[in-house]
Length: 457
Image 1 (tube, rainbow, N blue to C red):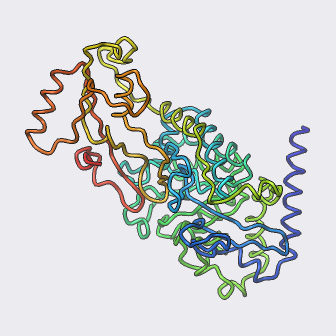
Image 2 (image 1 turned 90 degrees about the vertical axis):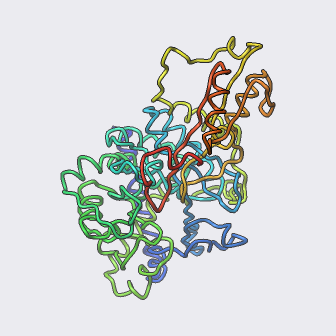
Image 3 (image 1 turned 60 degrees about the vertical axis):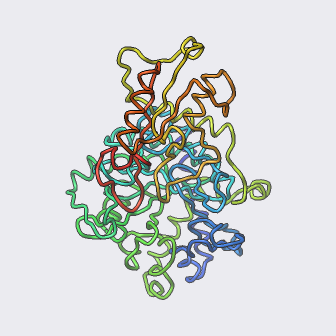
């Protein structure tokens, strides 16, 4: 009872503070929160490409700091300073762990880097259920094919992340289950199916206190997601009880959609601007601004100490060995679909200690492994250890980077002669490793599930 009472008091205090701030704003200031100021526009950035991906400027006279959004669901994407953040495993890796502790570790370490980089909105996690197997962004989504799995894991990510005084963002709301033609296609889904199959991970995020949602590019039942009153007002803010705010995906706004349930256009204000909204019912404007402010107040993003603010900078190198090891641990725990015919594994110390050891490594991925998918969710790592270098060092009992005559590497075959060479090497080896990968990304779906089409990637 005491915890419940304390929680209710905190909610009331948060609401009172947001009410007080909004009561002091001019109409123009209020509407400035309903749209972004573009990508690369934060005043403290030296060049546009060095800035955060979404910005709402600070309102200094009311001591409200800037709202600084950044990709993405696998770590802080900083293309201007690659290698200064950790490339964490994907959301799909988290689903594959089936482990709430790994979900918490993932959310905790990523959020620390966002905070240190000065961002107060982490644009993740991605929650969509994998309805279309070739969806280019399936790698981003932590539900896999199972809404119950996503609903079980997502609270641990939200709670771990928002402890670091930043907002998490549940995306992409909703039924954004393919990338090809995402800006024009319609996901036609009845109410019962939405609630039973597609909403559970999002409901779990709401129940965990997620501060923000992102509406998607697609249409639902022929109405754009970011102006769909059924999914935004009736479902999300009504039946599901979401009290935070809804931002659009970048460029996913098609009209001044405040009355349809959109609170904030990103990354610009082409529609949600003063000229279009100045005659709108001010109570509706106030409600949207309060929805935006309350979550930030609730996680403490508006109450950073001077030392905390001074330590934050997008120029910081925030990756570390601790975070690299956390990423490695999560990745290792996601390897659950592993066959072990004839008990070949594990390759123990005695195996690696053999004087006559011969190991074959086949495939370009052994030397240059794929790291994550493409698009806004991609993070360039500071260091990308290769299987070839790792196994070579193991064969020599030495540190990483040492080559070994015991390991033979052949890249992807391009001719029958290459395949014959592989056969010859394999016949003379104690064990052979074949390294393959697939690749997908934002903006388009995979052509098929075949490895052949992406062998060189």
